[in-house]
Length: 109
Length: 115
Image (cartoon, rainbow over all chains, first blue to last red; front, side):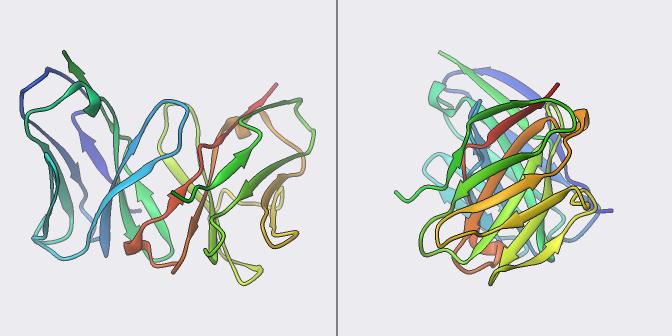
């Protein structure tokens, strides 16, 4: 069974700080996606990484796929209150997405 | 920006009743999906649908579940006889290419509460 473990489960930091959240597995995934989910809403796709070692940037967010395609990280620089939300990683496995439990991020002004 | 629309946003039903959850995928998308998220748990795959038939389904998607594309725009999930454990957020998603690497567009979900 393929599993994705996200850490930390919960993170609360001050505006302006940097942070990194992780998504780890013992399995290889063909691709890895990061979503952001607001309360009462569906997940919204942020990025997809496909190649081992790939790095993608989305403004202050940097996403990296591990060389072995088993793990990924999301780094936020100079976090802002608008970054508050639940960040989910999901791995592509054949015909479906395997989801992590998410990291709940709170950025305090 | 194109959206996936789900109705109703919240459905309360008695155990044993049938429910139909509705979704309008993005108009030029050809691949459709249902996922669910039980409160406090991970998002789980239910079923994928393409060319008017089920492509793949998970173990969760048993005989109590069915999907249909009754017309050119709607995509529905039917639960024939709801159980308490069916209470969850149900998300519909659609994709233009079906390739996971291209990502899916999710709707805002239907919160199903079985009492």
